[in-house]
Length: 49
Image 1 (cartoon, rainbow, N blue to C red):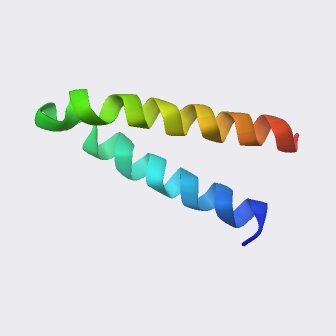
Image 2: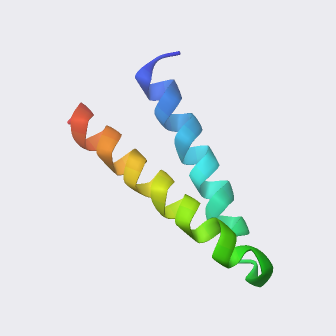
Image 3: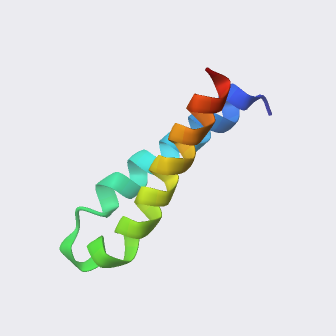
């Protein structure tokens, strides 16, 4: 799997987490995970730049 494929998978997971974290009953549980994915994606993009 290339770095681009890996990043695309992470972004897809992030998008799903972003949608699910908007549900009131899941927000507290998923928001920290969503933030971790966001930070990981940003770090990978920064390293690739």
